[in-house]
Image (cartoon, rainbow over all chains, first blue to last red; front, side, top):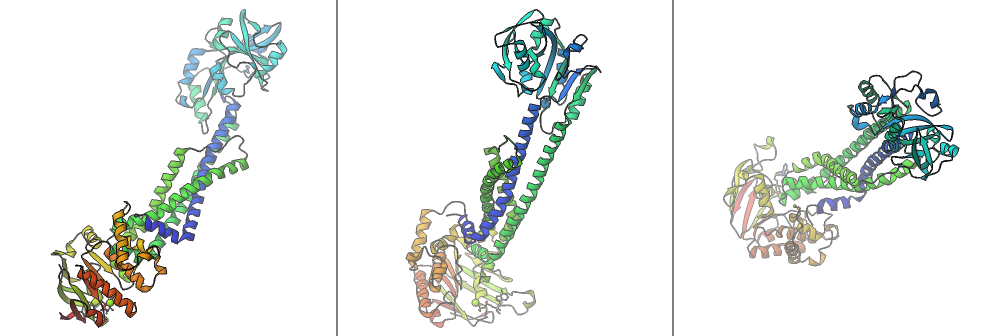
Length: 387
Length: 223
Ligand SMILES: Nc1ncnc2c1ncn2[C@@H]1O[C@H](COP(=O)(O)OP(=O)(O)O)[C@@H](O)[C@H]1O
Ligand SMILES: [Mg+2]
């Protein structure tokens, strides 16, 4: 028994009102939690989709006729006069832009046409480390996904056509490469290609430090793609910098909007709940003026009365913080299933729980501040008015 | 111990011409059992409440152990009410949602630290003293009027005060119950507790060591 006894007993005595207040406040906290989880998950699921989508900025030499996307492109047409960029300066310029921290992958490409058993085939030199970041859909049908220096990866179609299996030898411009793995079908241009290490391929063709284009991935929700594109263009004169996929951009804006809306709605709900807590404590103070006067007559200080009344509001808030967060967390599962967000799921973060808990405690303390202050002003003589 | 000096009090400014107390002076010594008697409306309760620090006088002063109550800080007056002074009201003034024992412990429920075992024991002793140890777990609603008033007396005793102020503690009770409470108060007084009590029962006043008679806001007769 201590200063909590009186507020808790009083809450228990007014059980119906207490439950109602906790329920309303819980709904507020639950919706905030659910919206938080939702906006987190929407962001994640979108980023997942964006990663699968691949790079969204393309850096290539300025050339009107050169189409560098190898999906449906005959590399043979342009390989004779394909223009290239200097690898070192280009990569340095890209990674030196202001928004460099927003770049999730910088994947340079060196394209070469070769013949394997008299069949022409394109070989793309890539930085596997970076490439795998934007090709999250790559998987090895056989062998492995991470070839070493003298090894290469074969696209599904290319492997079938050239009858390549892991361990097979392929001659590229006179340099022997071993097939390390065969990719599963991707449905993209990658299927018809062979992939070797960028530098090994450059050496094999005698064109060290040359790249034909660079794919850049700036994959974060709310990325300033336009700004990044502008910064890249400014840093790389004489090149074409193209942002791909307006869809990406608009979806990112949607996510941003959803997050902001969620925040605003949560704010309004919480504010309403706070006002209700404040009003509840106010009515409690008004009903119990004489009781408070009596406590003052028994020697309670003003600050003890203030604490007593604040604790009533804070107890309501803390109960709501626990119930609300639990309800909001499980509610967000249903909500996500309803919105068909795929693999996205709510994530329980103890830090977030603690932060919301603390925030709700603070809010309910603030909400009970005016009534608690008015309670503290009640004089001991109020005890005489009782009954 | 407790002195009033030319205390004047009126409740509203417009009544200042005919105050409720018109310059009351008296001195209460340790161990006295003082009964304040007089007609209804003569200012007995007002005097008692000014002596017990619940009201402050418009003019004049009240001193406890030589110190003017009006000159004390808020914190000192709180301490005074928490330790040296105790009050028993005409109606019991118990908190309806606390048990008898918890009501007795109320003066100790103003801090974060849990009530000590010694104090909990003391509360049970006080309840035992008023003959209610067996009803410690009851809510006030399940007690009779006399029992509630006895719980209120136990609450007034739990802090081991020097002075108990009681405003017609028997007023709402029937004769036997009232007599029981009076006997309790005289016993406590015999043990050294100073009691200042308002009553209009001549029989009860006869049990006091000192009777002060009020009329129209003045002390008519002090014995
Ligand atoms: N809170 C109050 N407000 C205004 N007038 C009051 C108040 N309390 C008492 N009075 C008036 O003061 C006078 C004295 O009251 P009180 O001290 O209660 O007398 P008693 O206790 O002797 O009956 C009465 O005329 C009463 O009407
Ligand atoms: Mg009276």
